[in-house]
Image (cartoon, rainbow, N blue to C red):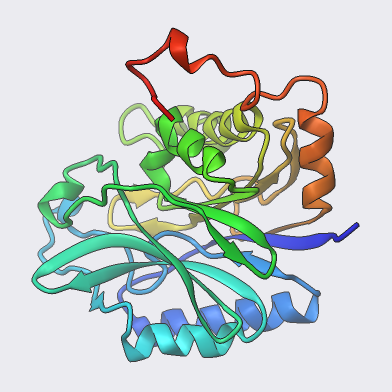
Length: 277
């Protein structure tokens, strides 16, 4: 049975694109030395997160999907499958996107659909969730707040996703915030969403997140790998780091769905307003 070694990163990225690439190169080199097949980097790891939350005017660099920067990521990834968040330029529109690269090419791309905290002032919204085939299995992508909507992950699972990669720039509470991020209510919500989405869809879940701070935001880290039963196989906790787990993807999914198959046992006719898929 094929075992996929997968890793989710919690690390700090900013506006210095060269510095971001230097950090990414080190992360990829370390992951390759550790035998990782699939690596998830955070939302906005190419150019940092939004500044408008602190009244700043600077924005992350906008990169076309066919830009030299994405080509550089493809080259760095080599035979590894790597997912990374960036600001995507498409004509005069900008999107909060995540790209998946590997095997010398772009494998998939997702534009963030759900936009909290006035992100729509800076980005256009994506409008679809679709899985795609990769050397490590069929993958679905989403970004941060997307995971608060069960329909997002369910659509990917119905499209055959075996692994869902969710990249985030998920901060802790901005009001009544505890000193310890482990006690923060937004850390708890981040973790609950990861486990619930994996369990209800019986998929492998890979969750990357920003670490450190950006302006007034303090990110919760909590990168993790979750199995189809909702159990956390590896986590960074509320610190920067890399969560690594070996997962026989096909085997654990088959085992989880053998008796109680959540996708198989759905009754769409009972909730037509939610889905006709």
